[in-house]
Length: 234
Image (tube, rainbow, N blue to C red; front, side, top):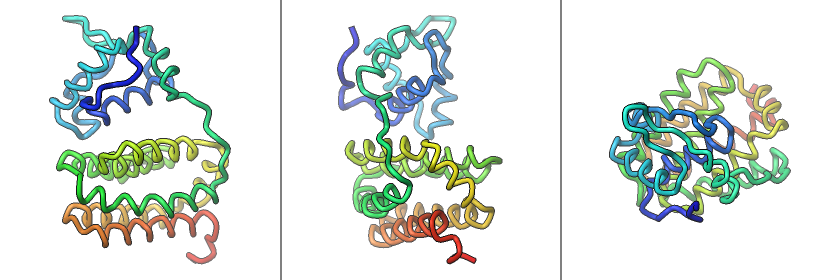
């Protein structure tokens, strides 16, 4: 019988990663999951954090450890995802309305990140930026761009912001957003976003909430301009 919720002590970043992968169909029942070392490196967390998350996933019946063979997704995993609403329908929200909400909400995370973020959180943000800079396609860049903004939300250590960014990213996966992003994500825009991301992370690392909030706001304003008023950047 699947538990309805994970204990609050579960390392949420790793747990959410698995729930998202299962919901998206990238991890199917009987699939073998990566090793602790691989997960630690790819998610930017310690092996101890990965191990604790795997223990919780196993207790909830989502994975099964087979000595000598590895760790595998169980047949019950999709049922858990469905019960928790991970795969719930995403409401239709226009890109303009989404950006309006992001500009109002995301900069407010800065103060909580400055107060609550751990070195592990900053390591994960750094990893996301490294991956985005190495991305060789719009789709890869967009994936790691989403991951960076979600890492910011996770670093607040407030589940409300984590939930909000998860919903934002789900809306960004809709086709209308994808068309706009492909049109607006020029080489120049991408370079600007990467520089802004680095500046945001630097401000957060020195615990400067005011500067980080302003940089986040300016970053979102620039995205909004590129999406809806590209002539201003010419």
